Length: 363
Ligand SMILES: [Zn+2]
Image (cartoon, rainbow, N blue to C red; front, side, top):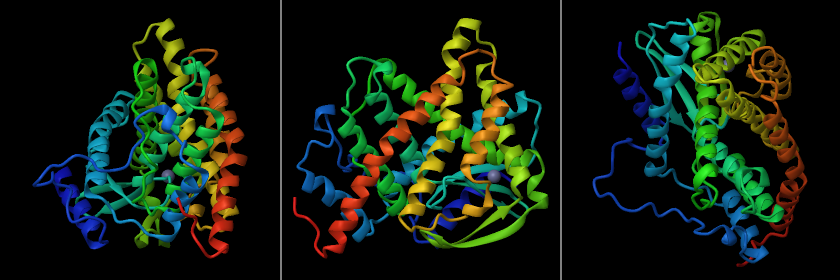
């Protein structure tokens, strides 16, 4: 009954579904060959036909899973999960059940808890959640002047980068990443890294919340055939327990601020709240776009609609944060995201037109 047994089960699942054979380091380590932007002025600066072709390509040519990509993400989860369990203990929740977060192309922005009889719980975290969250944070930080002036990205650049990230999430089967953005530096880099960690940890903490609250004992198995790797099972526990898991997760995440002085708390609390809510904002926005594009979101009915979860969680947070402006950043993030959506939809419309025209643009 150990985490190592869960790790074996995770790799076996990746292998069975033909995602990757293993997550071991490569025998011949080479550089990461994924395409990337080297400077911020290069972002979305290619001719429009080339930008469009890149979006179209994701739809018409299914990409292969890259072991290096999955390995990197598993590394991230391995680094983030122990802190979640530690914080849960600090908050008074103790679990004796081994839990392991494993990366997997599930197609949903909710993690999936898979009970492994006699061993523990395997929490499957979508490959594209980590990509989407990290990329959106980078774009936002590069585009909003609050994070440093002058902004690194124009509105048009930010809109295309966001369209590419959402396109990869919705059509890339968890294998495709948007073209990588340049590295940030200084305060921007610190904020992106903090918010990506806290957002991912919120997702893990939500699943841990189900485990800690004993929800899985009341679960019913639900199979969804529409994931990138075919039918997958998840545990369905009902909407009230989903809201409870969100509250547990929020409580766990606010524990990251314990021990800070008032001034530090004022500085940090908005980012923790912003990161937690950003995950649900992205969920809401991508569900809405998927619906408009006629795509099926796997396990969509398993949780309350994101907009309901956001409302409920905001009310809960409002009663538990310790500084008066703790929710301001989250509100700003929501507005920024919403304001980009028309532009993102316009890129998707161009892709549709191009595909209906029967030829892919050159470039
Ligand atoms: Zn849940």
